[in-house]
View (cartoon, rainbow over the protein chains, first blue to last red):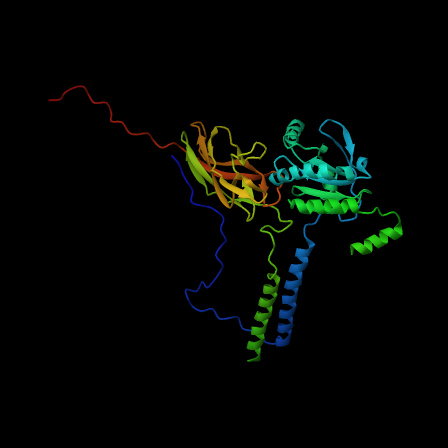
Length: 225
Length: 187
């Protein structure tokens, strides 16, 4: 015997409407004693609040727990590579780094990997280094097989949640951080971008001049604004 | 008269505010920062006779702009959508029927079709209370594991708690047999 309940797909509830069997519902009487002008002012204020509230919420974007904003120092970490060696981000100080968080189950990550292989070949001699961090539940062997199948020619590290947290939680993949030679985050891409955009960000990161003293830092900060 | 005009102005001001708030449509189908959602519709109480199989349909909805892999994704590393049930003793889990995925291509993978679910989909679960089960209501618990993406990014795998209630009743009486006929012939 089989019982098949009716379609229970969630659907929006019908709006409460006229339930008086077609009798027109009169608008509620305006309270006596309330100034018409105050009603008008309230309407204008409500409209302005709607408008600005909406735009401010959109501009704020996602909130992250860590300060991975442009020009902030890239948090250092130690992670194990696929061949079992401990690697620190600071080991690459002096190079422009593309720190790429990815996973084997992430389709868009798979698309950009061949680009990364080409870009590593092209810009590596100029002091550019891609570092992959696999945020994956798969075994190290599976990650290594995947990376080998994709022809990855840059170090891949086994990610840890704490490192993801330090970089803002990494809520979605792929996520890439462009880090200057002196260890500052120059740019951040969440999600798949075009190869041209990635290449432009690499060039900018390679060209970024290290900020050496407080005065330079202040002028760099002004320039950012 | 003045009141009417002011009421009209009030409505116009609100409409203008709302229209202004909506005048800047998002560039992508899924706004940045929005996370995927998968929800299950409530399941009405299901009556399940003992010693028989009863199919329960679970209806799920995926948030607009997202997709999840089907139960049979085409690529080795993709995480399939899978329901895992943990049923009470003596209620046996039968076959779980997943819908076929839609074969779609995405901007991030134009040359490769992926087998995915979008929008609404239904998973059918068969439950089979054994003869020993005491009639009454039982809650079935489980989880739906899925991994969602939009057109440009993917989100870590998640599990959605799933539960529904089954009212186990006695099996229906079997077909009545005529009592054995007397071999005697009455004349």
